[in-house]
Length: 172
Image (cartoon, rainbow, N blue to C red; front, side, top):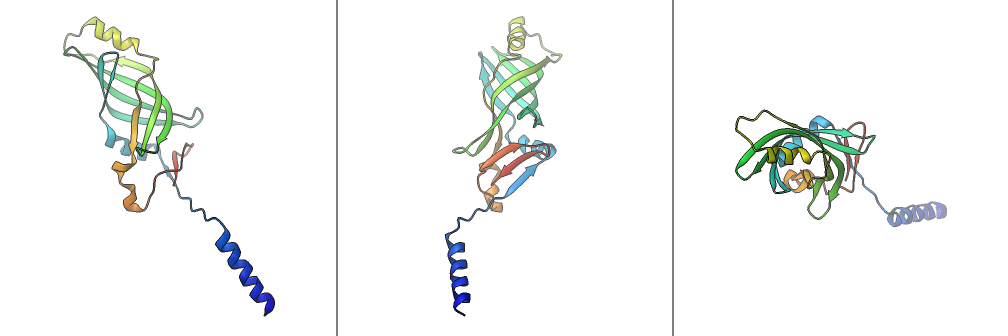
């Protein structure tokens, strides 16, 4: 009886004194991620005096390079002229804790294809946009966790986010 009492006291002490870690992981496939990303598009950014509107996002995850590639339709506007193009933007993924946002940081405009435009567009706008290929563009928002209202499902802000071969892993 004496040993049984000591056993329970030791067990109770261990359980109370141990730090408790409750981790919950979710993995979003590319198709699930693409559905969620449409909630934050279209997005507007100004770069080199040109207003860019990014729309129709398609996200591809690259776990080997630890990068995200986003294919978008781009509408560029400058001095009342408009030009439409298809672009591929790539960069690293980062979570901004204060704003609860998943962002594409240090994004590069890797590929740009100017589409046939109905209106006459000045060469300066076309050349200006083509000049951006391979250069950095402003940060692109991918997910806004506050807008997703994941707290309604008991999901807190992420502790870790990784790109895996299965998709985007989020640890909460």
